[in-house]
Length: 163
Length: 274
Image (spheres, rainbow over the protein chains, first blue to last red):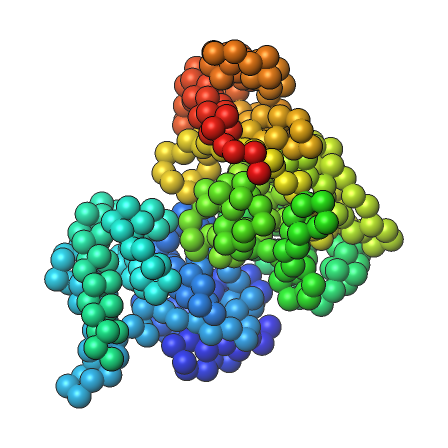
């Protein structure tokens, strides 16, 4: 079935089987393997992407359902700079605070955290923990992930204040 | 695992959706997909046709009727229930549904149709004496939600019918409590207490195949007196007949039930009548 959507502002037109999930379409049809396939039934959060501004489990959405939507994945976080790609403040914070160990859960963590920072006005550590409870880290590095998100939120709000 | 092969129809209207259901044996509706896609991935369902209702206009409304009842259209997502201000109990209970990425897709009517007794909305619907609007190929009907739930994940819906809206009565006072291993996971036990049309309704989830009304608890609480909440909580724990599974023994579920009813009724008793 013909399906068209944008991923990180690039347009994709695909012919896919209706049973193909969005995460498999992103990885196998679009070649964007940053989004990871974990449990494949909506528990682990590794495949979290943003669709039309809302975080979704891309293993629980069919690619044909994404027709006409705008998808954001982890590949869209880093921006082009004069000396190559510049990491997003969230990615920088995950590096600085050791918010990733094996890194498998990281793309989903980053996309969930991005939505949280962009929508939450009262970002406490409890609020971060509550929100990130939908993403499982098999290395159980949660403490540093919360540290990283808290730090990135502070960086992003000070950057926003400068602009 | 990956979903099995199926034909896919993106319905443009309720009439088209039920016509496709009517014409195809083993066809199923896809709304939010937060329970249905895992069921497909685990091959617990292998439908011939999947009818996607997400692009049907007119099913996303959330409106307050003249008597205070909140009408929730079939495509209203869980996050919209959290954000709305018409019905505080629905907003408060919906916060417990899954995680943000689940709440952004999952639908109210989908959860009711899925009829998992350990999910929040079937319990809230029962506590709020909800009415379900149903459309089939030839006619429409309404059903009290207690008549809809027939057993574990089994409803009175015909194979060619779909839910178009659910009416939740307003709760004059309420309390809600849930215990899960991880916030956002399915409840081990949850309890809702709501005063609806002047009557207390205490409903338990996770203790049986369908949301269970704790009549004995309602009576004990209604009798009043200093230990009314404790007596009601004990009565609820006595009433249930849960089964043991890897999440806990029968006794554990009884203990959790007692505590959840105690918390829900404590919240209920301290709430100001609205």
